[in-house]
Image 1: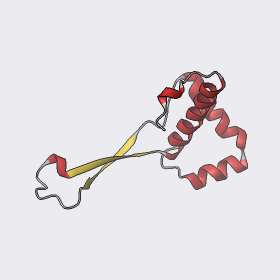
Image 2: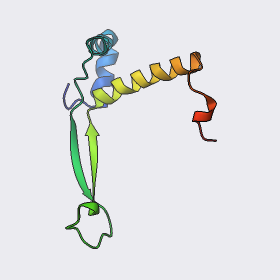
Image 3: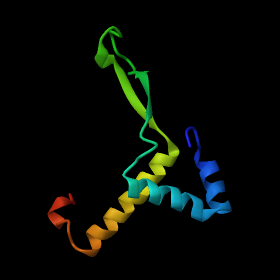
Image 4: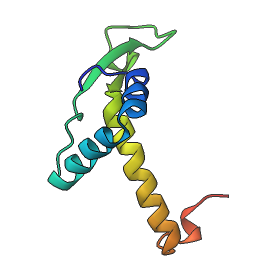
Length: 95
């Protein structure tokens, strides 16, 4: 699913909701994250006096949409379990 955007993922889910679920569940069961590859883009930081220095640049990682979607689903599962079983003390949060 390399290069697949959110629009295509929404369309695929609307057409066959069980297909994406099967792919994600198999991926988790097998312990494989097929969308772990990233594209790194290096941006110039504004108003830097010397662009020959490495600190004058800011690298950002562009992840695959399918990978981000799977990570969001897993994070939501973990958060639900943490809340249901009171596994994270309130002192972990800043008010």
